[in-house]
Image (tube, rainbow, N blue to C red; front, side, top):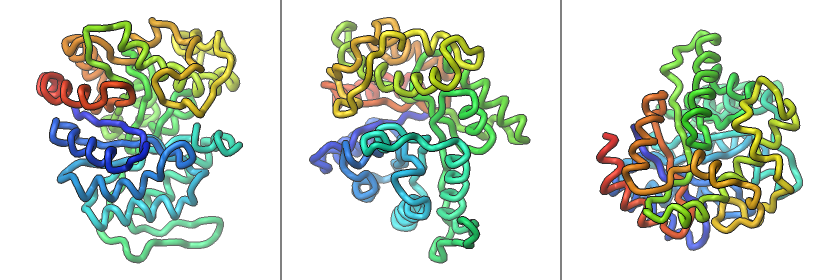
Length: 332
């Protein structure tokens, strides 16, 4: 199993770069950031410094979207980084959440997302695409490689991920829901004529290594609120009791009153009072190192290739070090 670290691009950016270097030294192979340029600093500027100050770390977005950047700009950004530092990037992409909502927009359609994934990958790898009737190619790209991994929850999004994406990003670490969603992705890949094993499965969730379970829960409760945004969209689309969405995923948002993006992805988020302890425990990895290893082994048995640690709490460096010293070696 590979491991990734997920950070927000809070200032000062040099701290993000330093922490990514620390993660690589601890054994993490992937370095991810959020991409929401109003709430945090612009990630592509910081990616260049991360790549410059690490040796082999693969860097990517978790996740970008097709609305806040022109597709050619996204492709060119990744392709430029690859030309400078070797093919060490991955494009994580989804329909859009905070990046579009904080400016009054809405998540894109799955049709647009599918078209964007195709265009970004083709352009970043040097091939020509048709954009609204105009043939476009990045003529300076040679030997470019850009895996495109898609974040998804709902049945149609899971189908698109399996049919088209190089990887699937699931932002929660509940084994039951992971099994359900991975099966849908793999079935969709097979139905599309692809080898299901060619789709990389990445689970991303907060991890807090501590004997103090209650404190760890409070530091990670924000995650249930963030996931709740996506679940609320699913309930709006499919209803609360739809067979297309597991009840285990939708039940907990019934007490959700709203969401304040000014606290997005941060410990102490006041918009997460509706998230019960049971959801925090299911969606996150909290407890001593042995508890993390046990859950990671379950996820690996379900076909998960990478666990990406959302490192957004009061023990960022301690979490990196604990994973490097005890957890990553146990999973190798």
